[in-house]
Length: 415
Length: 169
Ligand code: SF4
Image (cartoon, rainbow over all chains, first blue to last red; front, top):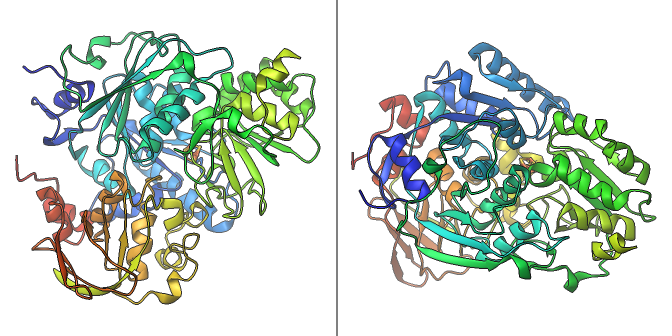
């Protein structure tokens, strides 16, 4: 048998035959997830297809996170429809305040290495951090998965991205992820898989790996698969199943020197317009946001607290924080992180997507500059097309909240 | 679905993301007409008033990048757009469009200005710019997508067949 990429390995196992890039295949789906943005349309389509119960209710998760708690009666009704569907079908419901879908799927072990996972949310690619073939689909595709337990796809060719060296102190997984998007471009991996490996990845925690895989869709990738070297999970797993064969065929090889990276910032209104922080020093910031499925985890909140400890927000700056899950919120409460951030002047939102997608909570004002830890800075993304959204790491966002402008966090750490 | 039809072009550029097709703040609804009311609002506030049912959207690279929200192709379809022609599409958008029965065609070399009359023949896989007298071939779609589009979308396809059928086995 020909040497296989990770994608070819996982998909072959789920199709019951040997597949190579370019093949059309029907594959078994291990697990699925829907959110309050995508579930209502999916439930409607599922019923119109004649569906009553998902193929595997125990592995179907519904998450109310995008507009949670409901900001108005229209959305409250949609939430009720989701709750009812979960109850009637025995699917798992993660209700308001439990957290962001992608954080929950990993936290709750709803996705494992080597599995196929389809989520009705584009950042489902996050689970490539633990070697799952995980990708986003629309509502009707997800309805079809609930009906059949299968989906069709074209096996994507793979780009191999090697991150050499070691990240410098102050350079975080987010900086690397932004640099990757800047290198490949917003459509650089369209219809393709990306495997990520190299010395700079090995020391990274699962949280940090999730940050990296999350931004795969900002390069158009179907999936992002991090090689298992250095991956620590709370349960045993078969690393060979998520490692490519020697001699696997790649469409392209890209290398990034991790030791040469500076903190990165992505300029509005497109995520691939990334530059080293040095080019934007002094840019005034009105609104700092820490959270999302990219950077709302405990390590991110702690990174912000390291900068904000004993300091106050600059006058005229507001700092909004939405922990990625209730568990993160609780952990940050117990270790004092929350108190540190609150003393500095941060405002906390319920665990969930918060202002990331502009549905409720925390819409920026006209002409304001937002510095955010999210993954998208498209025009209107946070609910106001007149605002400018810059993307950066939690450390860079926290430093700007203190200074009122973009500064090199090293200045604050050194003080 | 009609296999051949004509409409006026509305031409836009590269990397039109799903937030600009339909902003996230409008997506939480089952009232599909309300999606159409806000389609392309942040990209071109005049689009809704200029759009005539049957018009064709023409774009450059990577149309529909970003979110997996199916509300994006639904908004276009309900607003009356008959098809989207782009150099190429973001993957999830392309799939969503076919699934809800909105024809999307990848044509690398279509030259068009807003107002040009475009003729599309889905069966033949051709796009003509009647104003300029040019003809173009669209990139072929996997057979399963042609079947899904032929049924008018994935709901009708699965209601009829119960599961996927791949022509290639
Ligand atoms: S946090 Fe933002 S990017 Fe992540 S799932 Fe929620 S809306 Fe999407």
